[in-house]
Image 1: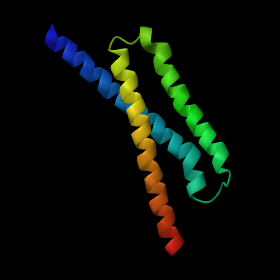
Image 2 (image 1 turned 30 degrees about the vertical axis):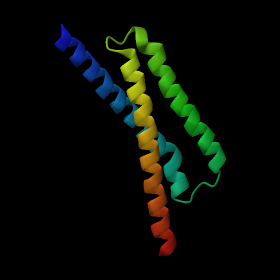
Image 3 (image 1 turned 135 degrees about the vertical axis):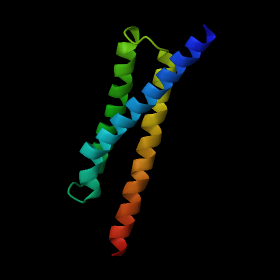
Image 4 (image 1 turned 180 degrees about the vertical axis):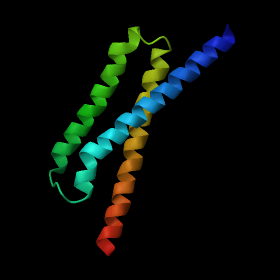
Length: 104
């Protein structure tokens, strides 16, 4: 029984991390890549949309919690952590690429 609980938490954490990473990657491709390439100049609107996407992703986890057979708490915590870390990592990649393009 104890092993099953451990496996359930592991699946919930991995699923939350993957969901958060996929949402963050999709958000990066759709929202931030055009800005990084210099095609779009409205940064504050993109920041608001980005935050809204994060809230909607976590709201989706909350709405589906009764259908999800694994730990809701572990899933939403892992999704939030993954959204945060992936957004930070991808913004650093954008900054590094912009800096390299600026020095050329």
